[in-house]
Length: 380
Image (tube, rainbow, N blue to C red; front, top):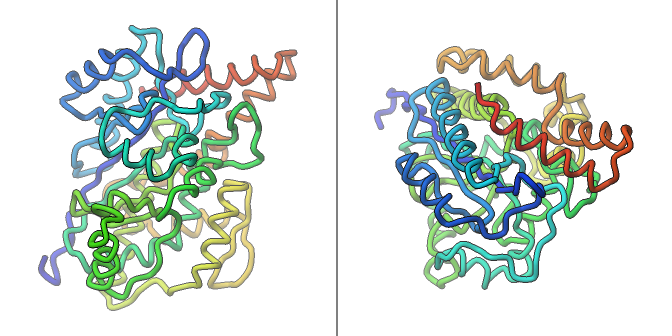
């Protein structure tokens, strides 16, 4: 890529869904093979199996615009919802199931990669009934990917806070907006990426793991952000899975605009100031625990700032980039998200409303699953 040639900033999005029985609203541990086969065939391979048989993943093609990505994602959700409904099943776009309980040996997908993960992680793998959303931004320059990754991690807590969708686990309110990341931390090579001085340094560290047979490639690195080994992209993986389609699109647009903003700084021989890993990690924890209800540390000011104020500063920071990318409206949907609440907020509201109307704990949790199934499939 020439020094003055701006990257295309192509975009791709992956969402993982849990499959639930529409009658019992429990997790379907072993759905009919035909369901997945039809999803794969009827979407031209844009649906694929995930770690557990009770999960599947949808993935857009490489998209030139946020609007194009939204159209494709809406089509994928609609197709999966319609096919699953024929089997009495629904997908839910949430990072945990409100009341499903892990079995001693959950049936993972019959694939050597997933068998390897189950062998390596052991008990941790048996708790991996979790789903996420991954946003790929096309950057075909290795050094640029590492430089942007180093700086983008400052914004990981902000992006996470707006995606939270995992307040329940095994029938309990966990007191966290994103319990998924607590579960994910039982895997190795997770969390915030450490800073790297160059792509060469990153490769040297990675190659030690590969050379010793500990991993095959970066697909076994589950950091919040990572350079993809399969595509010339920077992949942000910290997001919970968004129940509302427009929330997913908004966060993808914010992610994309932040990457362009950081590229723009680099082009002007500037950079986002580096901050201590421990301080960014503190914000990440606060986002997991409180979501958008938290004040986060503004590390330039050295003080806690309410999330709504931080969001306005972020939207102002990337406005030029969102306009250039044609996704200003999608980024500004963040204000609607904040006012309405994340999926985690709404799940808690559905649960409490059912309890207030006399529902048992189990009935209220079932109502949450019903809301998740309905909302996941509302794609316009």
